[in-house]
Structures are given as C-alpha cells and as structure tokens.
Image (cartoon, rainbow, N blue to C red; front, top):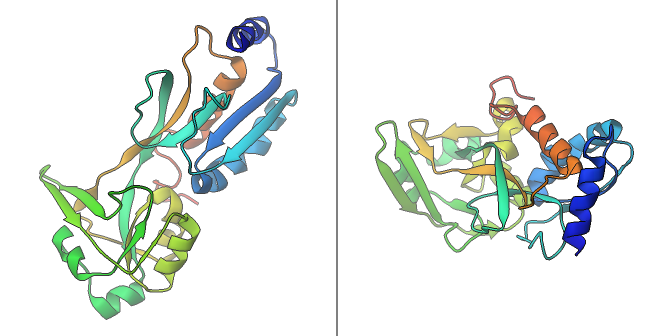
Length: 234
C-alpha cells in the first residue's frame, strides 16, 4: 500500500517543477564521504523542497525492506527486484609508497606479489584473491597474504602510506595520492578485475522524479570518465 501511495505521489509531482518529500539514499561509507557527500549542497540547491536522508554504510541493506529510494552499490547485483543504472567503472590499481618499493623492490608480474606484504580490504571471504588480465586477455589469479586487514578504507590508506605493504585499491579512493606521488601504481601491464558503480532502486511502474533527479546528478558529475580516473582529476 505504501509503495502504491508513493507511485501515486510520483505521478502527481512528475510534471511539477520541483520534487517534494523525503529522498532516502544509502551509499558505501568511503565512496559516499568522498564523492556523494560533496554533491549534497548541489542537489539541495537545485531541489530546496526535498529533504535528503543520506546513509553511509558498507553493509548491503535491503532497500525495499528498509525503505530507501535509491542506493549506490559497487559490485555484482543479485537482487532481481531492483533496477540498476551504471554510473562508472570501479577501476583499481595495485599501489605502494615509493619508500616501500625502494626497500622491497617493484613487482613486475602478478605472481611477484607473493613476495610482498599485501594489505587487505576485508570486504569478502575472497579479499586475498587478486585477479588480473594482461593486454592479450590472459587471466591471472594470485592468492596474496599479509599482516594487516581492515574493513575501513581510511585505515587501509594510512597503512599504505606508512610503508607497510602493497594494496589493491579503487582509483576513487587513492587518486589524489597517486597524483601527488605519495603512492605509485604498480603492474602497469596488468589490469585488476573491477566492478561497476551502480545506482539501484526498486522496480516500479513510475520512477519517482526525486530519484531520477538524484541519479541524473551522479551521471552528470561522474561522466563517462570520472574525475578520479582522468589524468587531470582533482
């Protein structure tokens, strides 16, 4: 009944100049802090009649059960009750500090990572299985190991900067460290396996205008090549 009421409200406000009501959004914590939160003022200036509720968490919530209007997710999508729109690729790099590489050497092949201390982002049971492909499409899987793992992006970034080891990180998290030279990208001839960043929302006959406007802003700001993937990104 609530869903039908929301659809009726969407139809009423679809032709109006400004969407109204509350927009509930859930996003991954670090990605949300770095790339969604800075867009909040832009969105609210465009839509002053909306109340935005932004939830930052790395837990995959049931957006239908918990009544979120839209979620940003990184990874495979398995819920058939949701509609997904790709926003950009979650391109990744193996990185370390110049000091670490000077001390321990630079890996030239994915299998060389077995000789290095791998810092792990503990977001799955396979967080230590790093997958790559070369320019010819040949696949490589390396089961790395190390003395530190965490489920927090900031803690992992600090560990990298402390010269503790190498890590497989998304560009959106460490692009400024790459640009400044604090970190260097390794294995340039091998592409790590990556996911897509998606906006997902419940399947309905009518897409609420508030959801459409929010997703359109993300598409506008991230573009075909997100600023963190561009050479002059800042």
